[in-house]
Image (cartoon, rainbow, N blue to C red; front, side):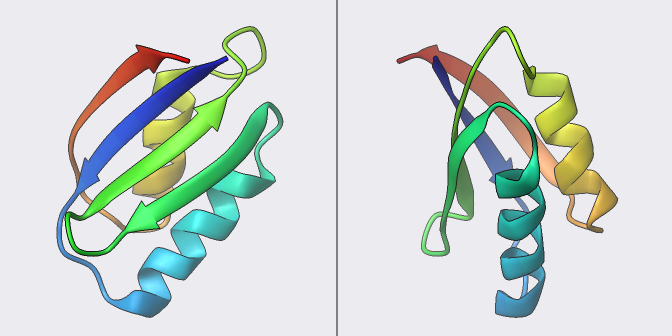
Length: 74
């Protein structure tokens, strides 16, 4: 299990809800939580099922710009 931190550009609340829903629907994602005060998405996920690149592409597919991303062991 790992935690991905995805820093995004400032987004409207409805855009953020769409991103959170899309990330939570991915196989291997335990939970995705958005912190609107820091524009950061924290995603708990299984390394053997999904990867950081898939998470970033899912966020970008929702029309949100990804500024940076990094992974931490859980």
